[in-house]
Image (cartoon, rainbow, N blue to C red; front, side):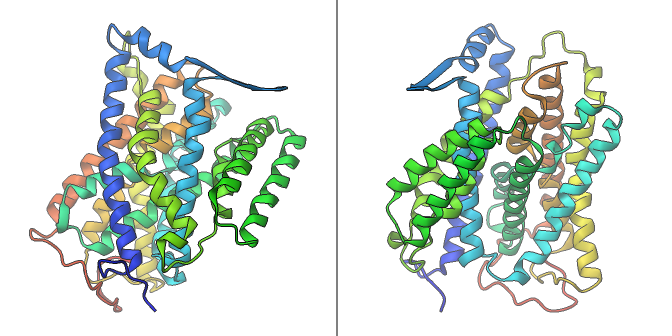
Length: 418
């Protein structure tokens, strides 16, 4: 049975439209926040901007003392909510959405792997031999969902629905890959006591799921305890959001009011798109150009990031697409062309939000000028990828609106999207 909304649209398609609209609009706010950060950083108000970043915020309860500057409360705390939402989106798509069939995952899934592997290899190539620099290998492996969908949204109804779905799926899987990378490679000084406590809390969350608890309050309080435990364990605190999302039950997928998972996505998505991510961009995108030497752009870290995003991302994505289609392991839908896929592959090189986040983890917000150099590589690489992708799509997309329903049934030998 196909689940439908009140408007008569299939539920996965209606959810996708809402996701696409929020993400593309949020992309504009991200851009404004990033530009504002750079303007303030290089203005007479730069001191005020620095004071905002380092504004001390303390939470104390008994022996528990959390004392961090504002930028770290956002990066460690509010970004946990971002990862909570991302994981909820992935879970929904796997259970009832565009990722519910294994065959739907093959093309964007393998393309996402290629789109992470080749940028990482390019960065390593430029930074081989310097152990400190190599910490940033994951920075160019990500795709910014909001920015990439925002550029695609500029073409309106000219964009075939399968092309939108391909980009969204690939970007979501990229975020899943980033979560795994953070868990495996960006942890230090592990506290096994805190980890064991976090494990016990995680078991409690999963028990709530198994008992069919649909109220948000128990998940919230256990989630807060889990966040503190993970923070103190040495594992990055944002992973608490991933664990909480895994515990949130789907409930009745036919009725949004009876689905805690869908309700929470509906509640969180506007806050993340219009508040949390723009605030993150504002606090993390400030680059000080005072006494800046342009030659620094051609040092190993920023050039590895920029070329990883601009060259590695599209080549990695399209190499996997070509191989899968060439050996008939996946089929492209007839509604789009390979040229359009090239445009989308370049949009995948817009790393921005997650790249900035990984850069902060890799280089610990300082030392040897890395903060400025890696951010410049991220911004220039993302900007160039967006411009190239836009120009390709402007030429490749049909001049008239694309019919979005029904999605054509794939046939062997066709050229279009998976």
